[in-house]
Structures are given as C-alpha cells and as structure tokens.
Length: 333
Ligand code: ATP
Image 1 (spheres, rainbow, N blue to C red):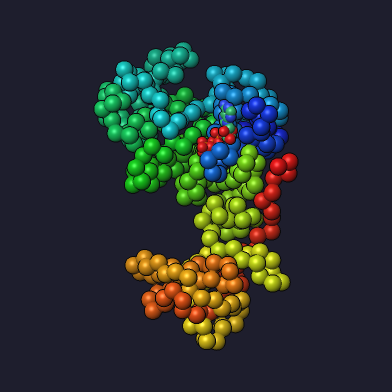
Image 2 (cartoon, helix red, strand yellow):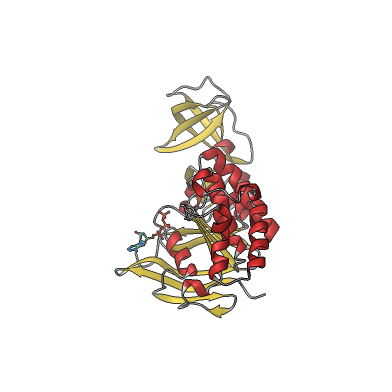
C-alpha cells in the first residue's frame, strides 16, 4: 500500500543550524502517528514541512506516492488543526466549517451535507449558528477539527491541538479525538510534547531529539523498551544505574523494593545497600530517595517508618530492569 506521507532524509536548516536532520518517516493509511519530544526538538518544523509552509533544505516529501517537496500548501490535500483553533470570529460555526469547501468550489448542496456530517461527528450540530466567542475552548477546538475533517484531507495534521485546554478537558478531548479518528479512519499526525497524550492516542510514536528521530514504534513497545536514557527520561523513567556485568539499566521506582538493610535479599535480582536521603509522602505510599554509593535511586514503599539516614537494602528485580542499549550522542554535534 502506498504510504500517505513519506519523508526521506528530510533536513531543514535555519541560518546554518539544522532544526530537523535527515528525518525518515512513513505514515500509512489510517495510522495515527505522534511526533513527540521536548521543546525545540523539531516537531513543528517537521509538521510545517509536511503541510508545505516550510521547504526542506534537503530531502524529499512524498504525499500519496507523489513528490510534493515543492508543492504549495493549498495543493497538498492536507487538513490542519492548531493549538490556537484559528477560527474566523465573525462567522458562525457552520460558516467556519463550510469556508474551505466554498473556496474549493464544492457544490452548495454537498457543502451543507458535509458541514452537517462534520459537526455531527464532533457533537456540535446543535451549535451550528453560534459564533466562536459563544463557545468554550473545547467546543472551539471541535469546530476547528470539524472544519479540517469536512475537507476530507488525505492527512490531518494536529499541532498541539489540546494544549490550550485545561487538564480535565484535555483528557476528555483526547478520548474524543481518538473516537473521531477511529470513526473516520482518517490518517493523522499529531505533534505533542505530552507523553501521556502520545501514549494514549498514537499507534506509532516517533521520538525526536535535537532534530533527529531517536526511536519509533508502537507506544507500548517504546515505553517498555526505551533504547536510550533520553527516551527513557522523556517517558518518565527516573532511575539510571550502571550494574556490573549488565551495563546501564533503568527501572521504575514502583518496581524497586526497599527493605531493612539486614534483610536477606530475595533471589532473582540485584541487591544493593544504601542510605535513605529523602522520603516523600504521597498518601497511599512514599517515594524514597536512596543514596547508593553517590547515585540516587528512587523506590516506592508503603513502609512509613523510613527516615532520612536509615540504612536500607534495595532489591532490583532483573525482569523489571530495562537495558539501555543506545547512546544519546548526535553525530555532528
Ligand atoms: P516546541 O514544542 O517548543 O514548539 P518544536 O519541537 O516544535 O518545539 P521547532 O519549533 O520545530 O521545535 O524548532 C526546532 C528548532 O528550530 C528550534 O531550535 C527553533 O529555535 C528553530 N527554529 C524554528 N523555526 C525557526 C525559524 N523560523 N527561524 C530560526 N530558527 C527556527
């Protein structure tokens, strides 16, 4: 099957500095891909090149199998939803959704049907005659989504679409976005710096570090087996240890057992001794920071008798330890 979007060795420089370096990316029909990474890693630059608002310095962009590297945005059959919604304030919801279709001279009867369908899909058919300022932020974002979908683009580009919403609404809208994407089967590329959002929505996650793809795969796969410390840290792993004979590993605090320092270590794992440096009470459990020969290791425990200075033993079950096999250095740095 021809990929909907394909990037081949795409690089973009600004004043001689590469913001995106040799990125290869393949998005197949119906896929929901998330570009994830910290601020400045090149997510938006990548998305803007796919949309045609920016030209690559080198490399090729194929859309539905055709070379689109130099095509202007309006000839790319792409829908875009921004963080800022970008709705026309003087137009009703229905007119906002219809606008792009009118520009493309779609027949009026078809526009009516498509606008209605798109608003129905996002659950806003009853607000078709309102103006954007009479809607909540979440509703405005749904209008922006309806507008993009009504045009039936080959691919929907979502640039941090939920980041202007408050935390509760953001989680609700994630579910909504997922439902809409599944119902329409639309191919989508989401840019986000929110790992939870990417884990929940995407069926393929692309992690960028300083303009390069450092890991890519199903969210579950990447989460269970981050290759490098950068990826692991970005996904919320906090413990990094060099174990003799095993190399560098990471392990989640909830998988580390903290026991009395003179307790016999259970079999099947690595056991180290250390001193409690800090205890953070969280209600149902505590997060204990343990100094192990100068390295801090975090563990969770329900034992609330531990205090700073307590000698303890940590048990690291090896079946929970993840080996970090890659390095984070960027060639050319
Ligand atoms: P954020 O999450 O903060 O939006 P991002 O991952 O989307 O970050 P980009 O906006 O793609 O990152 O920027 C990548 C790098 O390119 C940054 O170092 C940024 O400063 C630089 N950059 C982006 N656009 C321009 C521009 N028009 N001129 C110069 N430098 C730019």
